[in-house]
Amino acid sequence: MGYIHCCGALRKTRTFKLVPQEKFLLCEIDYLKKCPVCGHLVVQLTRVDNGKEVSTIRKVNEKAQKFFDKMKNQILYENKFINYPHYGKFYLNYNEFGVKKRCYANLSRLKIGLAENK
Image (cartoon, rainbow, N blue to C red; front, side, top):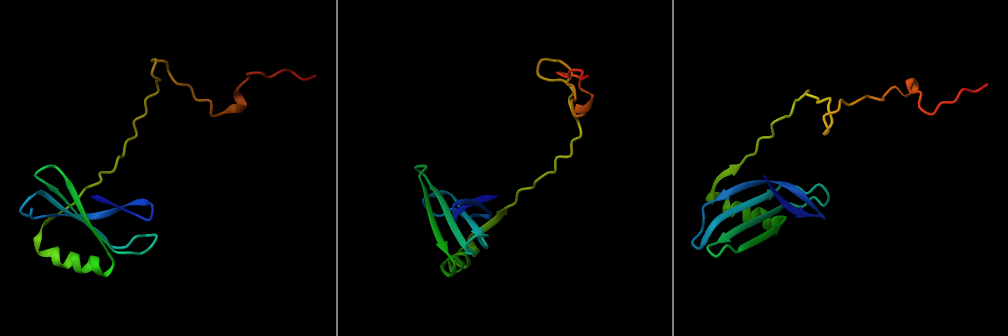
């Protein structure tokens, strides 16, 4: 999953791997269907050449849609990332010094600093 910087934040995009062109080792295209702030469609082509230099081409709205339609025939596959849920219920009752942690959630039972009033 790629990111495009739009409206002052990084937005998650769909990333497609393209057939490498003549002088390039890697070609990827990022597709942001709709920015949640401005509502623009954004397409960004990122290429890495043999000298390890990165070049980007960025298009917005109608030009982006035309550019993406033009590049569709060069798409090899879409990079899909799987988010595995973390369902862990393990809790370690010891701190970093090996001492058992104590819970002070019930503050009414604590007798620290109480003085007897008469």
